[in-house]
Image (cartoon, rainbow, N blue to C red):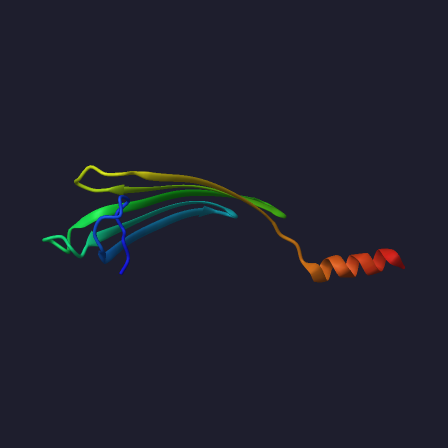
Length: 107
């Protein structure tokens, strides 16, 4: 059983998820919302917690940067709100191409 609410009250019963994404060539904007219900609540169908994430991705070969903000919050009741901002940089390369170029320049 998973404790889902930000203040660790209740047990998750159901999970509802919404996701949308807008891509323009290699850049994108993503929005993600996940609702959780509480199995110990009198109404196990009513969402009690929302995890919302917004993400931006930028790509300029061979570098890619992702910026995401996630917010976990209770719905309809006071409680803790957790927020995370995440930045990831990725450098892409192909070892086979690097090895071929290295052997060609060594000749």
